[in-house]
Length: 300
Image 1: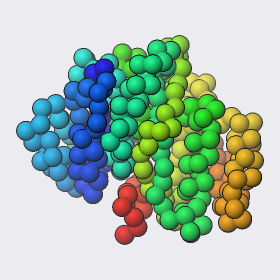
Image 2: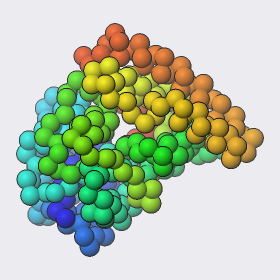
Image 3: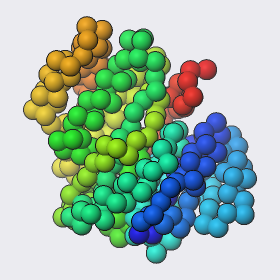
Image 4: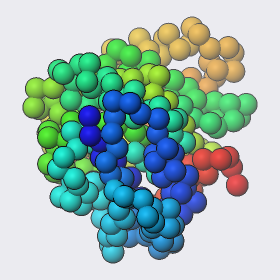
């Protein structure tokens, strides 16, 4: 299956070469990566220049520059307007990830084997230090996402979808993967989760950034529900209660403290995010960078 990969990037000079080389070095048999597109959106650093150097002389590598930063969904739409129409599968990858060499192949294999599925998600695993409370909260959060996704797939960080299904995404959205989920489901396709397709991310290292990240995501999810009636898996209260209960049972005493802290933070962040969705809605589509999340190699 022919694959096109897009990496939306805003000031990712620290990470763009690493993620590009990981994507260009994917080990594939079924998947045939025919293009890699970097969309440098309103960057004030050398993201575009580094990307061009990495891709120099490599067929199918393109760097698109958006002079103004209008949000990740706008970058995705820029790509969708210009992507190679031969691609049967589109892979969307965040720039600040460590990508295992078999992720694309595993996601494409899943799509091939499940024709009723229109979109699949990889499994993000954080590399934060779990000995600190905030680091353990990050691990707990992504473990909860993993547990939820085993029941009802929840997309994030790196996803793959059938290219013919998505032509454009509403630029009022601030949750790109969830908005693509909505499009896929509206066309009668299911979602899939590939837990052994692992990517590594880095969560916030301060409580302020952790809370801000959760608030932003909550706002995006509630806006999507209010605007389009689409509910992501992590808004299912029954599923969340069951998942948290299982996590509490499995964790050691320090882990239990982190679960309680993560849940309390999530409740507060969702309350704030719901207010934002009602008041701000889709009028604000860009955010300040959460700096600590960009140091995928560790805190600097």
